[in-house]
Length: 377
Image (cartoon, rainbow, N blue to C red; front, side, top):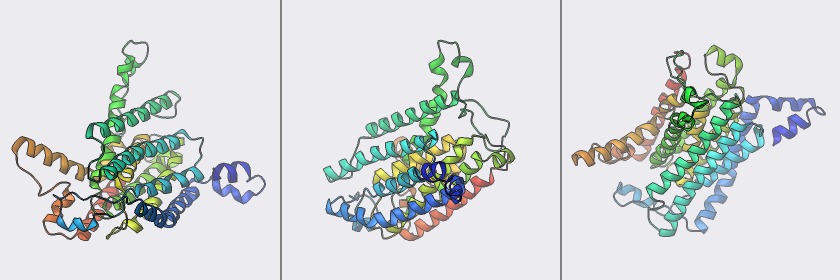
C-alpha cells in the first residue's frame, strides 16, 4: 500500500521517494514495523486475552514444573499474525501473486489454529480439533496453494522443478510433462507436485506446532529460520546473485523478502513477551500459521530440500515424536523419557532456560549450514 502510494504515485512529485523501490529498504522497514507493532500491540492483546479468560491448559503427564504455567494467556499468535500481515500489506508490492500466496497461507493455517485453540478454551481442557479434522484442513489449504503455483507455472512465473542441494544439474520436474499435455491422464501429471507441496507445508506447520512447548523456544527458532529464508529469498530474486549461485531465477520471488522480514520482526516482537517466564503463549493459531508460512515460502523459492536444515530444530522435534510413537506401538518401549525431545532434556535435569538457549544455538548452526550450501553445488 505504501509502496504503491509513495513510489508509484508520488515519487514523480518528490524524487526522494524513489528510495521506496529498493527491496532492501522496504524489507528493513517491514521488519521494524512488525517489531514495533508487536511491542505496542502486545500488552493490549495480553490484556484482552486475560479479560476473556483465555488461558493455557497444561497436560498433567508433562514435567511438573510446567503446572505453574496453567492459566497463562494463550492464542497470542493473533499478535504474530497481525504483526506479519500489516507490514507486508504496507510495504510489499501487492500486485505480486507470491505475496498473496504467503498471506493466504498465514491466514489459512492461522484460522485452523484459531479453531483448535478456541475449542480448547471452550472445553477447558487440552483437546481441540480432532487430528483428522486438523490434518484435513491443512491438506486442503496446501492443495489450494499447489494449484495456484501450477497456474503460475503456466504463466512462466514459477517452476515445478526441484532444486537439489549439491547437485546443480539434477533438477527433476515434479510434473509429469508427457502426461500434462494431450493426455487423458493429465490430472495425474500434477499429483507428484501437489503431494510434495502438501508434505512440505503440512509437515512444516506441524513441526513448529510440536516445538512450541517451552517459553520462547519455537518463536526463537522462527526468528532464525525466517532470517535464513529472507536471505535465500533475496538472492533467488536477484539477477546477479541468482546467476552467480546458479539458482532458479524468479524475478517476482524477491518481493517475498519483505514478508520474511516482517516474519522476523514479528517473531522478535512476540519473543519480548514470550521469553521465559512467558507472559503469553502463541497457541496453535501462532505455531500453525508460522509453520505454514515457512513451508509455503520454502516451496515458492524452490528450497524445499533445504528446509530440514533451515528449520533443523523443528525437524528434530517432529522426528522425536514420530520415533517415540512408532517405537511404543511396535515394541511397547519408549526411546525418550518424553516427546517432543525438549521435554526429554527437561526430565534429564536440564533447566528450561538451558534447553531453550541450547536449542536456539543448534537452530542457528543448522541455518548457517543451509546458507553455506548455496555455493556448494
